[in-house]
Image (cartoon, rainbow, N blue to C red; front, side, top):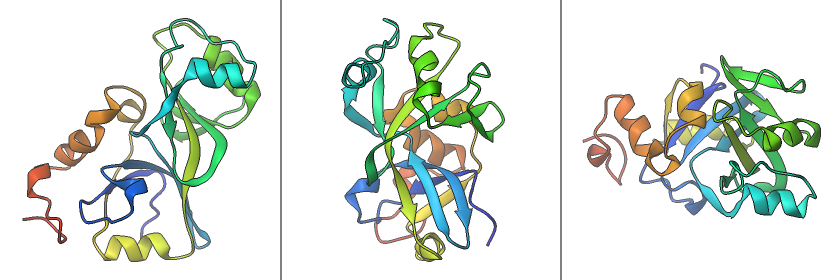
Length: 183
């Protein structure tokens, strides 16, 4: 099977796990040892300002009301920052123009950057799969896969991302059957 990272996994309606209902997962790692990704369209009930306050960090007023995202059910207190800033030294390029940072040293300048030109998605927790688990779930029809891109991962309404991604693949979301497959 082709490597799934980087890429988007789109949860099918029949996927029974409530952690992934109507989610889009940005795959970060995929190997023989398993897979890891971040849900990028499920907001947590906390803002960046609230998160920054708990960590004694300063956040720009323009970012204060931005949502924190639930990256997945694994290690829910661990933070991951997706962004498009080339100024941050500690960063890993996921796809062109989309970076992942995991340190407070990277988070601090991103929270303080008031520029509307820098996009940030902070995720708590991640989604993880053991060896061959995601391959099995894909073969069972629990997920769709498509190539990842920076803009949908960082911009736009997260509440519309699942439907927009499905439509971008050429499917009408209403044609996805709860029992499996496409009508």
